[in-house]
Length: 139
Image (cartoon, rainbow, N blue to C red):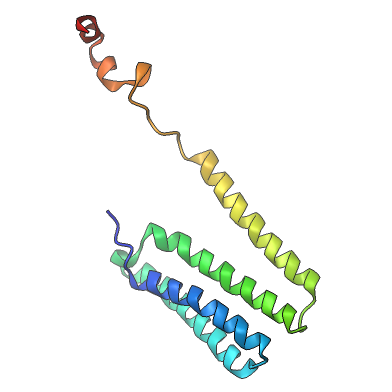
C-alpha cells in the first residue's frame, strides 16, 4: 500500500486548484496578481519535485501522474485565459492544447502496450491445474 497523502501530492492538488483562479485573474486583467500566483505555482512545482526526490517516503505513483497533469492543467488554463484576454492568438492556444492531448494519449497508449495482461486463474492458465493434473481426475 502506498500513501497518497504526501506533501508533493498536496502541492500538486493546490496547483490544480489554483489554475481556475489564475485564469479568472487573467481574464479580469489583474496581471500583477496573476503573475505572482503563476510564480507561486512554479515554485510549488519545483518544491514538489525536490521533496519527492529528496525523501523516498514522499514519492508515490499517484504523484508521478498528478504532477504532469497539474502542469498540463495549469498551462492549458493559462493559454485559454490569455487567448480570452486577446493577448495571444487562438491558433497558438489550439496548438498547445492539442499537443497536450496528444501527449496524454501517447502516454496511455504506451502504457497499454507495455503492461502485461492480467493473469487469469481459470482453464489452462490455472496454476493449481499445472501443479498436478491428476487432481482433475477426482472432480
